[in-house]
Length: 138
Image (cartoon, rainbow, N blue to C red; front, side):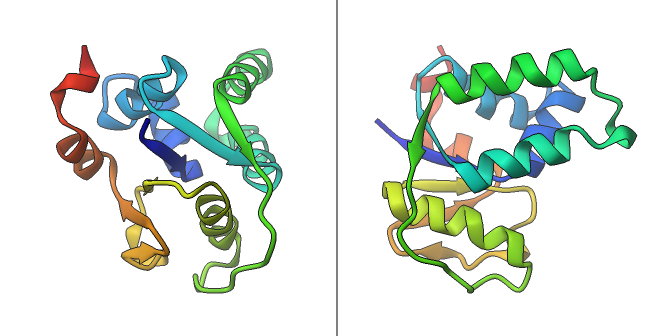
């Protein structure tokens, strides 16, 4: 099964506009067509960012979404720190991807990441959907 690590901006986009590619990527994970992978630091960032008042997500909806996301994800336990990204919090996603051997790290902000980290390719939602093909969308 294809393993994905999702940058927080993918979750924000998916929740702000359910018709976009980002929502489809999240849907593939929660419907277990691909395997989502998280770590405790990644999950903590998801919770923190989705709770920003400016995003105007209802607290009970955030809680429900995060519970569902956690139950559909594999929990990674990174064994060492990475300091490749110039945006320090983004290194947590690389650590998670490395720990689980993720196939893809999906982000809306590729400039903060290397094109590849170990075996993980860094892609945006459009690129991911193009690579995995329409067989996953049914």
